[in-house]
Length: 290
Image 1: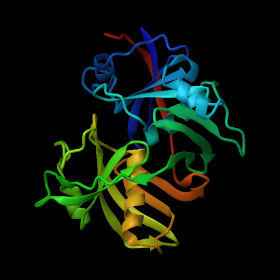
Image 2: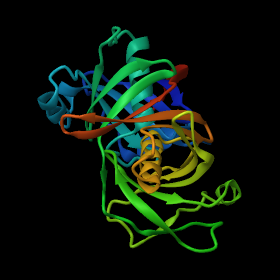
Image 3: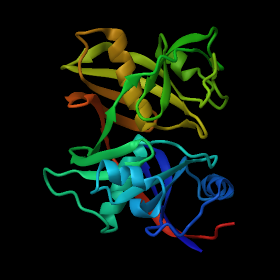
Image 4: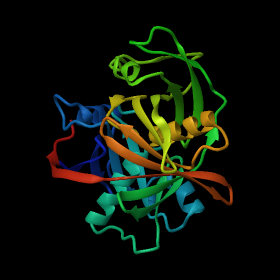
């Protein structure tokens, strides 16, 4: 019997399991069973709360930031390991605070270890803000085929700790007509796969100095989700890239689960991108691991 908490960030939902000392060895099959929406708890992924010192991957996090006591061991709904999850980091931080395992004092940050490096979390007016770190154009710009699109569309590859391909569509009607219960095809395919975001720019694109876009996403290892934090960041970065030098550094991205904020800002190691939005805990219980 294992204790769990269910949480979500703009509808991107997670099973949270506290395992501070790293005693649990969750198999891919167990993670998939927990995330099954018919026979399990139901979620887009599992967040295992473990001390960085108790997981092999945590050594790199502690070397980067000795204060990163907690490591987010994130698994996709199919049991596969993922590098990062922007919504997951906010929910993870919210859980730590509610459980009394960490604090965020005014003007301070909470460093959290992930497989993509340490991510700093602060409180914000709409919940939490997480610095996703330095981003880059990946150079992988495949064509994307999706059910509901008449022809393949060009994609822009962006890495924000995990891989994304962002695809621009012409209208809200095209976006609504996508059948994302089917996996989009990328040509050429990427060896590690990618999350695929489909985006429609707002009309007008910029209002009061803030860019506005609408997005739907197919997450690798999961399927369509109501929100994808790193995908939201990648979407804003892609649209800013397409819009040119005068495009803003602050964006509002609408997803089926709500709205998230994205901010680009300079740092010592290059430009960083930050994601802000809510995080909620829904209920807690116990479950048998099969």
